[in-house]
Image (tube, rainbow, N blue to C red):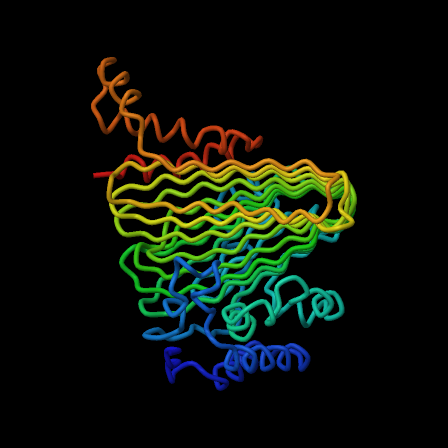
Length: 435
């Protein structure tokens, strides 16, 4: 039986956020339609294999209160020192409020837009209305509809064509209110011939009880290059549901890196759709779970047309009583001839009480393709531990080196040095925090 919704969450909340943000009528109607879709949709069926290992009722907005403020950008004078030298732009969303938004002047002059999603709906109505929900709409699922109805502090990043932007765009979403519900959303549009990097980070203090429903939808046009990094560092008592989807057009190249370190109960749906000939997609996943953390990740590489290439490398390390479930789908459509797809999921168990499930899936509708996949689940190699101990290391230090070596091939594929070092710092801090 479906769990009843908390009475604090309802259509009145949708009206409140529309009024607070002064949103246009079309967006207000879109939100209300999304709320109706959420209220009408049943919980995902546990019989469906994508929810076999995770209870969807965990993500209902019960025992929490949605944070639905209006956008409130801080002036550029409050941008932290040094950001101008390290980033093309930066946005900080604190508890659903856009507090900081900075864009380097030369990129602003070139037509780049980084702003709140509600503000963008007023300033660029035709652009936002065309693309908002086009990739991840209310019809994508019950919780996607909930995000569409209640997102606050959403971000809009538009990068026009033929730009080569070496510095990354930094996006930070932070929660700091106990028993609150957050609904981050990002709409990302990259036009033809552009090269850009986006780092999208989510975090909260460890002792707060939060619910987070995040949506990232992006479109990468012809011959564009995008590197997108999603760093999930929610606190240890957060329930997190995320849906990420990128569409790749002709000759486009997208690398998505998802780092999962935080949260108590996590479910993520990650899709790259190759819609244009010669499109190339690379997915990298790094998950480190400890204590009683639960991670459930589903990846999809969908080859809609031919002469496309995808590569997926998903690494999981678990200790204590942590759990991981991974399902990875490669789908090659009937007309997608001459496609190549690779998928690898490796799971390293540091303790006998942790558990991992790995389910690779192939749906190949024509024979003129090349697909390979691999999956392993196993304990740490005691011979490797023993060898390192004979070189003077304690067991914990030996395990730490083995974990670093396990993650290394995935993280070292990140070409930008400062970004790679930063991500390694996050992983190392969790490795070194083991008790």
